[in-house]
Length: 309
Ligand code: ATP
Image: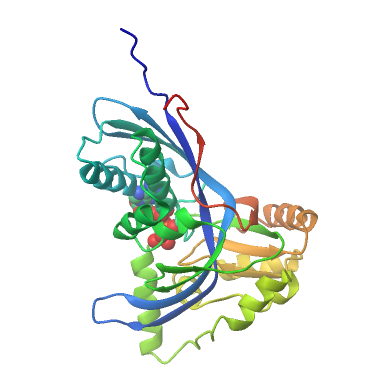
């Protein structure tokens, strides 16, 4: 009898940068009301899923040492939830190849979880729609639906109610990885503390920023980037001020802390400018490592799968 061993499925999922992140007051459920414009970047994690006897996770690449390989990994939760829904055992080995900085404010764990949902949907031939996968993604975390969606989108609620945003042109980014990470809950707590002390000012609405995206105008966009969490991230990691200043000195149009940080993202006018800014920043020694990336990029996508059906 001929038995077909399914081939592994390989999925890539993008990092995100928040072009606009407005944080409202603390809600009674412990979350903050957010309005955020996300852009997915060409910086991606790769997740490979192999049929196996039981669920195991392997991690290599950027920051792998700091990523749990047990149920603490968001990928574990994604696999067990989807297996439960499909009425089967999560009998797979999942190999994560990280390029997105861990605890960097770029939603790397969310990207891996989105990749896992998409990969298992393909491996197990579940044929769940994008909408069904997005509902499952939301159960795993507020940033997981966007990692599936990709491109540019505006999120409200906890950041999870997504609507696509028209974005013309490709934007060029330099991403500066910091030494060490920042815990997202710590950064929100610090923001509450700063606000309790009467500072800092809040960013406005996202209307003008969305117009600049629709126009594909990087210069205009640069003046409109805003992140309410930036003051809190800078308060916890004051050395990031130097990084942000160095990026502007090196010729970036603007620099911003990505999400809860500590990664900094610099918007540049052209790809050549991005390469130059990256080289200058490397020389200035103000960060751990640098990547050049473009956005918007697609959401999680299968790049290799068993075609035998
Ligand atoms: P956030 O989405 O909260 O902004 P982040 O981008 O700052 O997150 P992540 O890299 O997603 O940070 O990870 C935050 C924490 O989650 C890490 O410190 C790590 O211990 C844990 N974690 C769980 N699963 C993963 C994963 N697959 N990749 C990276 N970290 C993970």
